[in-house]
Length: 181
Image (cartoon, rainbow, N blue to C red; front, side, top):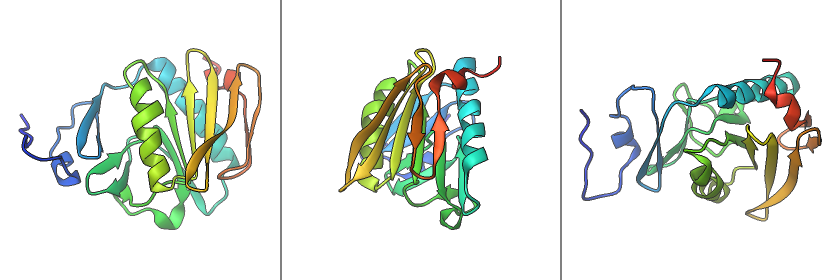
């Protein structure tokens, strides 16, 4: 059993003591966020999106899916469902800078955190683009960082097409993310 301090915000050092129990442990401004393992639909959409991004990704960038630590501060470590970052920015254990793109596939247990806390924290850290995909409604909303603020650049559903330019050109159609299964 892990005992966490109660008299101060948590740090990444505290996070390192969390058990490997199938939950995702993240830290936002010293507050622990625990989410259960994602379901089939979430993972299927994530796999399809990962395949599309990897196929279009230039060699100097890397596409990775969770779990992988994005260390934004001593009191903030996120694990977006999918990230794109410069190959040279990774360490063996983490990404110590904001990614060029962070993607969250929304789940009932994570929707509010993904659309508010994570979005705000990634914006503050200077993440170049942030996408949220709803696997049930088959929608995608994309924001890009302009003058230090996220600006919505796309909101597509079903067979609509999103022609992304950041972090590299790629075409995403939400209905294609449901996959062949």
